[in-house]
Image 1 (cartoon, rainbow, N blue to C red):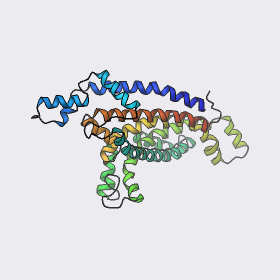
Image 2: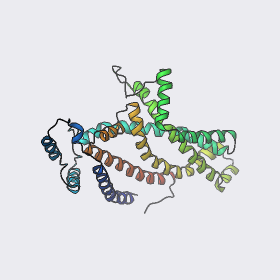
Image 3: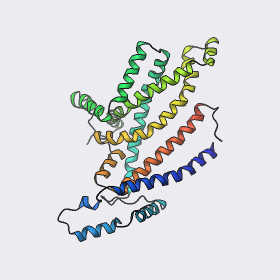
Image 4: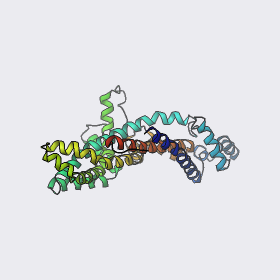
Length: 316
């Protein structure tokens, strides 16, 4: 396993390099430049050219990329064009908030999807199965921004049970209970789509496993149906589910961009929107690099969890 992990990490290096090249080219193909965003129409052209020269925007794209890559290899993601702060420190302050929101949403989605998917498979073609399958399609189809607005309108505006946005109440001390109340709505907005997608995968995987001969043998030996379903069947059914859970990580980051902006959650999703609007190229490059590393790490962890769920799987 250690050899396999090392090999995957070495393979990820050229993949990351290719991702950074593509991102850098696409970002620099956008019309205009960051200097135009911070200067007034009355600003002398000479001052604009001086600022472009200071930021290195007059250099060819290949030269700009080599300079950025050199900074990266020295452990520096560069400096923000808009605030002049270190990109690494800006992302570091917000990455934890996004990971917390994503983890809570993924955990909540799986806690909803697992029992529903198992029960739908056990009670195949029943009313419960039809209703839950229909609701899973609804959960998958609802746009996250629309669901977030509905949650705000019902639970924050009308009922007043939960806060509209942010991470803590201003002047409220910021305790654990207050943080939990603030994370409920954005986590639900992300978790509903996750649960809707996972219910169908879990149901289909369980249906395949429940037909296996070894489960008939377990029942013939007198094993209780609860243990047959939730111990013997579920573990083998988790193999394909682990794959789709690993694929959920990129979708979580994509959804977080919208949900964080909607709920004013100070994560990298909100930072991405702000950086795009201000054409902060260095911050956008840092965000893309961090997102690529997280996705590649999630894929590697998915392979490792395969062997945890099924010891018969070996990597050589």
